[in-house]
Length: 475
Image (cartoon, rainbow, N blue to C red; front, side, top):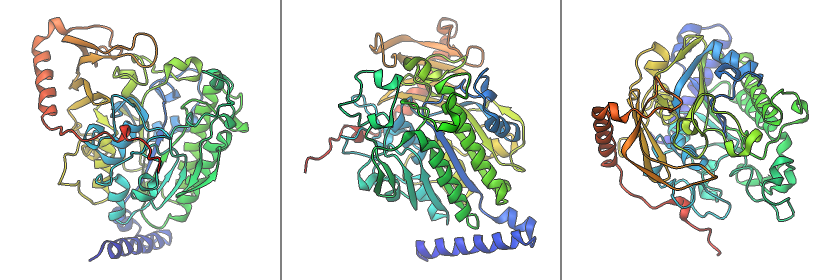
């Protein structure tokens, strides 16, 4: 049976089940047999301490707080990299970016003059879910390649609405120099395109309305595909600098412009969850909310907060990669819990594919694990390790409560030299999440264990060419 036939059959079955459920027929049976809808809301540069439900005292996030109260808060959940492109590649592939070439020690992310992007050999989450009969949409910032072969519609998504790379790229020559453009930003300073599928709709994108328009697009997608299983990937452009929000959120937060931006994202999440409730989809939809990396601290009050964690974006300290994460599935995931079980954004791939009835690719190393038993049945996480990469270098490793830093490097300012540690710096993260006290001298056996674990991982890595170092062809 061909893939198209399978997709058509699955969607027809899902549509019939949706009609029967809406009429009150076979409600219980249909609810159990229908594949769950999957939504991933992925912020850009959100800090661990930027939400009310994660402890921020003045940013007002009632919709995310309600999501936490109705769902699960994950307090030890990580991105796979401390910057945009590699972390997004890991989410989309369920694999560390070192395996796909979506990282580099020379260029940390893709730029408008980059000629590379997500390799065709990778199987994206959208491609895997489409094989299971899912309608798929990407709404927001992509940043996995801006050439046609790298765009979402070439990588498993039925539709795309968003910007192809970061909102601070393509700055025009007439814009104020240095960081002056960021302190009082105007959309016209950045010639970033807003795209629908493969076509430019607007250039420069009006970033003051972009969060609202992403939200409207997402809500419309939910409405149009409410009778079939769907996967909605919603990677927000914000709160990456330059910061923008719509008029309705201007000067509403006690935290200033940054708070306005977060509160509009909070409103956006509320609109998405309300759309699910309106269409009776809330009990059959799992929604993830997390971020690609930590806050861009060097932008001062235009950046976020890592809360009690150390440092932020660009580093492999906890503040650079541990993310504020919520998972919501009313009636399936027990409400009002906080879990300290380990997880990463790569696990979204494995968990989603399992819930959809699929299986992981068997022809490659997969780094994500299935968290469904942890989310649904409160079982211990199958994840025992977290690997902290900066570019191609394994900087640190966590196993259980222990984290060893083999190398450290600051983010964007000051002394940016790579520092190698022998012996490694050691922290017990369940006692010292702020990484204040090096306890290596007291635990040589832990250092040995973590060093051996890092070596065992390194043996699984086969070097591949970096996609981030490919220049844009002049042809």
